[in-house]
Length: 166
Image (cartoon, rainbow, N blue to C red; front, top):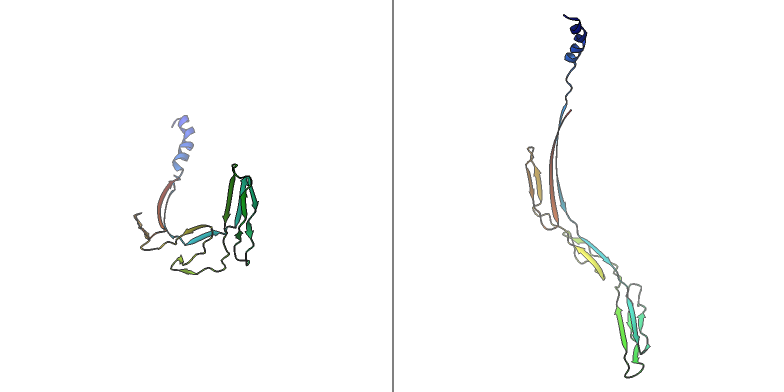
């Protein structure tokens, strides 16, 4: 064996003896999410308002009359208006918006719906969903079956496979 060969022999043996370090990780996850929306009512009570404007008009102004009870809405009292100078141009505008009375009770849910929701002047309603035939399955091979339900439902399926080599 030559001197050069003897010099590299420990290095070559080290390389041959070094173990291979390779890990393989395989992860599989799957999920199905089935959702049925609940009923909702969002209602905002509006107040009473009154306004009047004009020119060349004499007025005994109307306005709002206090409600008869704490849960009632204000009402309008009429005013009297006459043209100040007969034959001259005039403008006149009067408006009244009667507010909502306060409702103190709410009916219970029945079959996922609010039977008779309290409705105020500014209201958004959403009917509750019905499950119907809503279903979802995922096989071990990743095959997925999602079945639509009734209105207001969603079905989401996910299958993820991950392979990592280190």
